[in-house]
Image 1 (cartoon, rainbow, N blue to C red):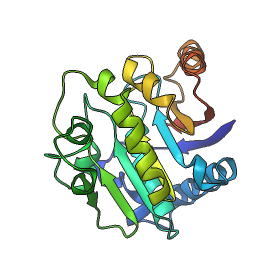
Image 2 (image 1 turned 135 degrees about the horizontal axis):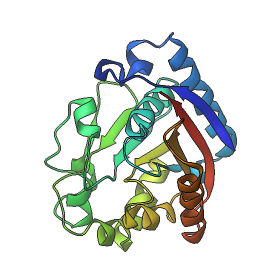
Image 3 (image 1 turned 90 degrees about the vertical axis):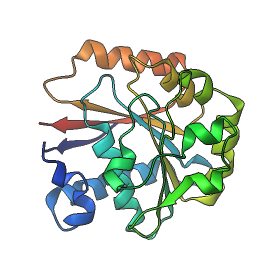
Image 4 (image 1 turned 180 degrees about the vertical axis):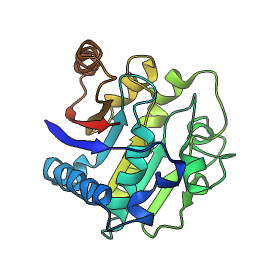
Length: 218
């Protein structure tokens, strides 16, 4: 299922357009994406969504942050998890610290409640990536990660996970299997059909549910 063809921009100032310009065309398109996702996740037991892309530079982090804001502005409680332990960016977008985050919780160095950070946007919390680790695949595929997701799912209306690219990162395949669904972000004119099909094949092998594809139009 195709969720949306989405225009993007290279300006860093527009990364959170759903917050700074809620009446813009792009914000309206994110509301459409949000509605489509809600049709596919009609109960709270299916509220953990992984967002990934075939390769780097597809705009998935911009997509997931704007989607998180769009959902939160509808008075739904959202947790945005940065599971990109190799190249995190969520903390920079929301200007929050990253000294304690997902990696620290999974290693048992910090409790979850101290790692989750409230943002300036009401109803939106973030769990940043935390300190760098040498074994992201082991951490994200661990029982600790499974237990963490089981803990946060009933506490939020929606849990969104920003993950590394599916074709390059084994940990994304491990994590996709633990989520209710996966959304692929691809770029028109950049992502070849062969890479898109390979990403779908890998998700199928991981027994992950592909909910849809968001097309960026650069």
